[in-house]
Length: 210
Length: 188
View 1 (spheres, rainbow over the protein chains, first blue to last red):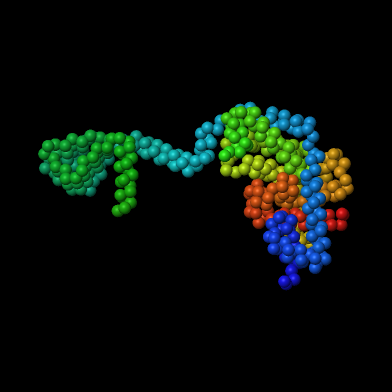
View 2: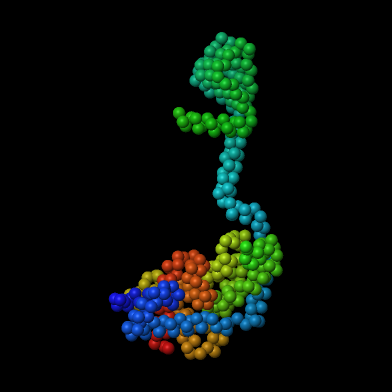
């Protein structure tokens, strides 16, 4: 066996004192200590330090029964009278992700709700608006006219007498469709906040897609 | 199965003061002893113990019962002790290791203020020498050494209490031990 390096021996001494040196290494360390007086002395010093420290730390001379009782009184009387009510704050702490999601949804929903209520102006959207007749809040597709493309009317009455070659969507309003009218696409009336919300979401997503 | 402490904590959380007083009984002396060994001052040790229980009480709902209760409470108490030790010392670049004293940093160079209470005067010379040696240990080594020798925690447990890797704990135990050895070398 090669002679052990003293620096390694020192690390092993500490490991030994920490009860962390494998058995085989203990034997090797002992062999080194027998051969090396300097390390042997170092080890003895460490062992003595270890023992004395342990002994001193363990000496329970500090807290008398009386002092201990006094301290306990002080601790118990120093507690706040009423515990802060834990309830929902505790739940929030335990479920941060859910809480963040809930707050987000709430904020989003209320802002959509606010937008939905605020928006009272008549809005007409479509690709072919030239033939439309707008009177007050009524948007009329005159008889015999052909509107090409989709038509969206917000906050107003739609009066379809002619033909629409596309979808007709009425938001927060009413739709009158004459028997002579012809709408090639879908007809949708939206007057619920949730429908409106859904319409806005799908619309902004599809407008992103194109 | 839940530990006794975890169940008491749950009762205390519901407002049962008696349950909390049981917890105080279980840990008060241990914490006092530990705080005293770190601070060497009765008043400060008592303050730390009281502070620890106050924090425990106010944060009962945060106690995560997958962690040992003792680990949690020791963590709170050690942190309070370390805070106090740090506040005592003037701020130098303490973590810089000095060249002529291998393994020891600036903390060791600051003479300790003598906070030994009268009762400690009854100690033998040997004990007083060790006492002084421990008192001059830098804060970061002291907490490790106190947990190691007083609470007899394993390196792993000390790591959990102090929230640091075991390798760091190991290094600090070794350095702390060498520090004490050096202090005691010519005196014993």
